[in-house]
Length: 389
Image (cartoon, one colour):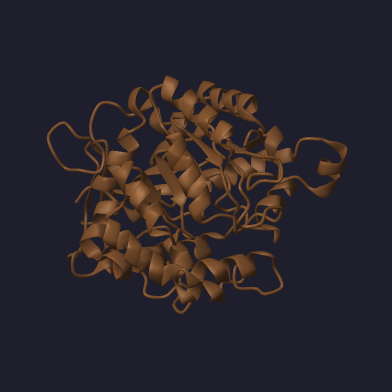
C-alpha cells in the first residue's frame, strides 16, 4: 500500500515534554541544541512506522527538511508552514509573564518557532516572512487552544482583516492557508476568508459550519483522540488541577455529534496525530490510538484514505510552492513518488497491522519507533526498512 501520511505534526515541539512539566512554555528552558536534537528524534519516529510523509503545522523551519531531502539526515518527507502566526495572547503566544510585562519577545519567538502578529499588515508581513524562510504554506491561530494557557477556547483570534492578509500572501505565492480553529465562529470566519485547511475544528456543532466546509471544498484535520473518553485519563489533559482539563472535557463531549455531522456532510478530512510536549512512549500511545479512533468513527477504508490518497490531495494544494512537485503522494500509480510499504495483514479488516492500538493508556506503548507488522518501507524508491529476510 502507499506510504502513510501524518498531516499534523510539530517536529520541533513533539518531544519537549521530555524533561519539563509546563508543556510548550517549558520548552523555553531548553537550548536550541536540545530542541534541535529532540526535533530529529521526533523525525525518527515515522519511517519505521510506515509514515513516509508528514506535514508540520508550525514550529519548524526548512533546515531539517533540507537535510533529509539531500540525505544528510534520515526521515520522512516534510511539508511545513514555518513559524506559528499568532495574535498576542493567542494560541501561539508562549511568553512568560515577565516577557509580557516588559514587552520582550519570548525565547521561542526569537528562535522562529512562533511569531506574534496583530492586524492585517503584521499578519501579511509574518506570512511573507514564513514563505521567505522556506514555508510551503502558512498557518495562523484563529481561535483558542487546549494546550495554551493565555487564551479561552472560545476566543476569536483571527479577524477578517488578518485572515484575508494571510490568504492574500499565500494566494499570491500559489499555495494555501491553514488555521488552528475549534469553534463554529472561528471556522466560519476562516472559510469566508478563503482558508483551505482547518486544523482541529473539534467544537464545530452547527450543521451550517459543516455545510460551509463541504461547499468550499475545504479540509478538516481533526484531533480525533480528543473525542475518546480515554483522553481524560491523560496525565496532562485529564488533570483537573491544570487549565487544559476543562477545555479537554468540553471538546470530548462534542465527539458523538461531531462525528455524525462529519459523516453526514462528507467533508474532506485527513489524518493527523497532533501530539506535542510529550515523551516518545506517550506520543506512540496517542498516535496509535488515534488510528483506532478514526476507524471507529469513519470505518477502516476512510481511515486508510485519510492517511494516504486523501492526505495527498491536500498536500498537492501547495501548488507552485510544493517542495515535491514531480509526482503524486499517497497513491501507487505510474508517475507517483515510490512511497510503498508492505503490511503483514489486511488493514481493511484490522487497523492494528498499521499500528492502531485499542487503548490510549491501558496497554504498553510500542517499545521502539517500529511497527513490526510493517516490515518494509520504501520512500522515493529507496528502501529504509526491510525485515523480511
